[in-house]
Image 1 (cartoon, rainbow, N blue to C red):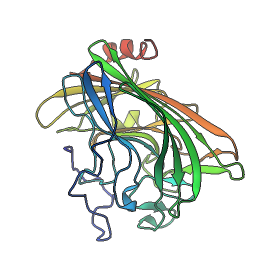
Image 2 (cartoon, rainbow, N blue to C red; image 1 turned 30 degrees about the vertical axis):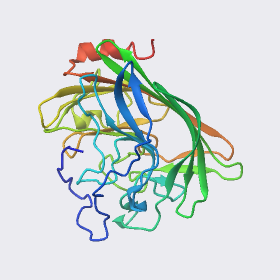
Image 3 (spheres, one colour; image 1 turned 180 degrees about the vertical axis):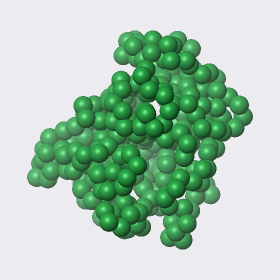
Length: 308
């Protein structure tokens, strides 16, 4: 569990009520793994034994390149509630499923007793290269916010591999569900995160770019077809992550200077509503590669992510 620990201005590390980083791995030895051929490329922590303030939820960690380089971070000291690669939203009808403080309009970040949990319910399929299951997004009292069907698959692509994640979130028959973010609740600075979030590792700020933009300031908030994060670990191993798959209205939330992370954000600057009984579906493809890709190579690879 290594990564950057730079503290962003205005973030929330000093409050004594902040839960500490656990001393033990919260996962289970029975957690499923994803494989590409004979290589284990990701562990799926299904039911982490975490304090509610960490936003407990299923997450992928460690995710590795084919050469074995870990490219996710979990429970980092700067943001303990960042859990590898996971699907989560900070504001779901007023419940914080992201973890950490909640951003309150007119007040700022505040510790509140508003944390829920995303729970695994049952398996539909469990193979070495494919996982399909059902989940419940719950409030602090266990009440139902959303149901979910999720599929994760791993496949080879050139000298790397692709994680294919798709999901369908369904609102209860009698309740509209509003998805929000710190930005929709008043935080300035493009903090529109909440969706599929990947906390990466990097010894120094990684390069982030799209086909048309370079750097955090230009990439954050964009709706480009893909975004790449090229970093290096503390041990000097170079890697590139290539993300694709924004739904209509989604935006990329990207950090490189504060910490390394990319999110396909559902509510970047406007709340999103799932009407009662209706569903919202998404699909993301992430290429996990050793080495640093240049823009031309990344562009060519992105065009192939949907192909076998």
